[in-house]
Length: 406
Image 1 (cartoon, rainbow, N blue to C red):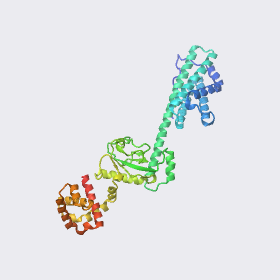
Image 2: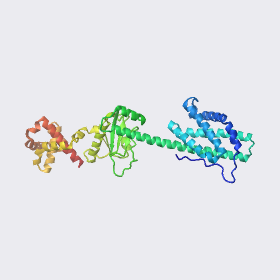
Image 3: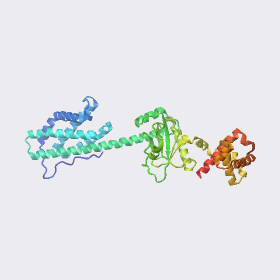
Image 4: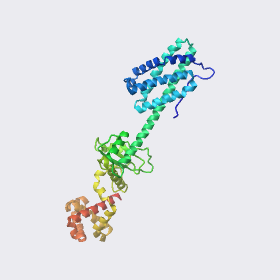
């Protein structure tokens, strides 16, 4: 562990040494000075005004005693104990971060304690009859050391925060991997890992699959959904959103803006242990977006395109259905095939209502009737069989979606 060591000790030919007798006198009064410094810190720093019994009180007392002991040792021999002081305060800063207290509170405690300790030492220096030059040297040593140990404490605090954040991120990545694993998910394992990752366990989730153009950077993370678990390294990047139906998570323009312009597919809302299913459908939807079968831009919700996702759940089988059901159209020319297919789909969807078909296709009703006569010749009684009509709708819908993407 690299820690900053006090380097503000007067040095060189013009430096005035602090009498060793002062260190011995201060050492003899260490308990009384520790009492006063601890009381002053508790009085002036609200975060430290806690009961003196228990672990916190014992740690605070030990910290004050150790710090003053090291400081007195530093007065007696500055070159020997500087590193020890820095290491002590570095560890103190680290401990404060791990306990969840603020750096401001720690720095305040150091300033208050340092100032009060200096006032007490000043009185002792007067009792010894030190001249003003020696007192000045002692003051410089005291205040510069307080500055240096404050830096050491800040470095320890920052190091602990960084390590804590990194560890928390690693735990959340492991939790996300567990939730999105293809195998069965153990609720007990999820709750255990979620607790260590400080992630409240929701009842329902949805997984968002994000487009990942080549020029995107890993740190270009989405801003959406507080509490989301995000993995930007996977392909495609993914984000698990807790309680997606609450608080307008996916509603309106705000969510799209928070994705920083990334096209995305939102999987269905599912129970937590079924998060892998939401991911699977989101990834499928994202692939269909890339092919133009679903809208290419912005955000697509799987819940709004369930029939399309169902159609494309098994594309080889879908191709077999399309080829078999629409075989009668193979005898028509390419242009005629397109017109007959769109007319047949409109007719099936409109309940065989000719005027509705004409309005939908923006053509004359007589044109509709003419095309229907052609279709009757090609398909015969199949057009009036309920099971065959469903197959026709599915096959014709696939062609319509494909044409939209071209």
